Image (cartoon, rainbow, N blue to C red; front, side):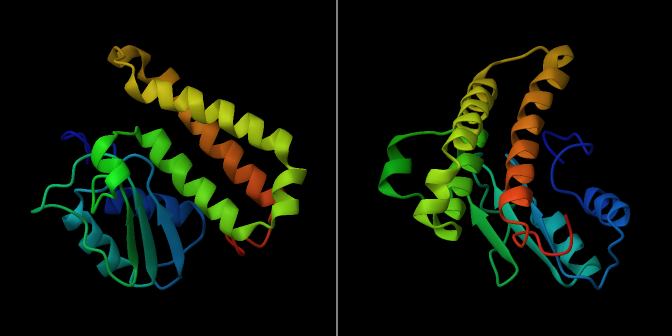
Length: 178
């Protein structure tokens, strides 16, 4: 849950819902990637990995880790959070959840795509960068709860655009589960 709200964040119930809609069973291998949540969800991580023993989890979050609640890194879980074992850069600067996801995405694309492939998709990267900047700004804006759906819509559009970009240009990236 996020801020005591069980409808948000990394939860077993969310993973069960998504896996069932994707036709996955408890013994299938699949990947769960969070966006701007999950760093302090150790109990949920344990519940998820007990129910789905072959699931792998990538936590992207920018919130401060609580030593008593932080996710446990292991061979099935990776944490990408500037506040978790921070580099010198992140000891000086704070970045948003959108920035955290964007930094991870850029790193993946730079490692997975060749330089010529990256240059061929410059126009697509301009769109991604624009959505990334808007998502970054929205992460810092205090919004009234009534405006949250619009804020979430923009961030969701950003993440869907990235997913669709990878499906079109790197269909092997997601394997058989899209």
